[in-house]
Image 1: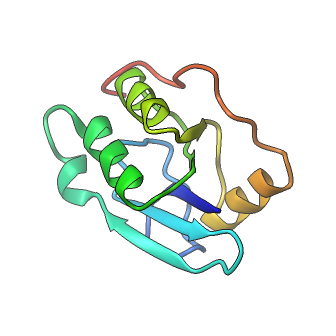
Image 2: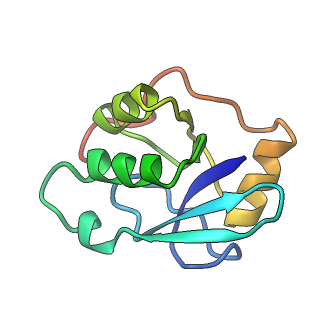
Image 3: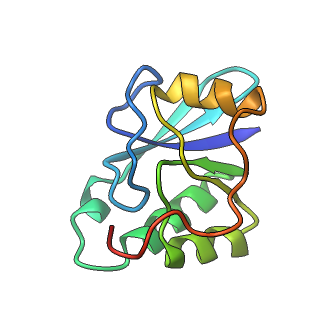
Length: 119
């Protein structure tokens, strides 16, 4: 399974970034091999608007089935759900610990956005 995780850095020991659209990086982790692909989201993170939708598009293009983040705003949440990507709010700690918590069933799929827009 491919799990996208918002991140402050480019490896699985980096901290989970609590913001989805404005996280500097999004790591796509293969849960079987723990291999990662890095999405550089820094340019998008500085955009005036639409950061969440652009980040959702990038995550979808990488084939992720799940997104782990701290908070996902309403527009990005709708875009991710439309792409068939489960959203998990409330992830924290390192990217690897977030993936582990999800795989162990300690993080659950969100039924609604975790933050207002432009958080």
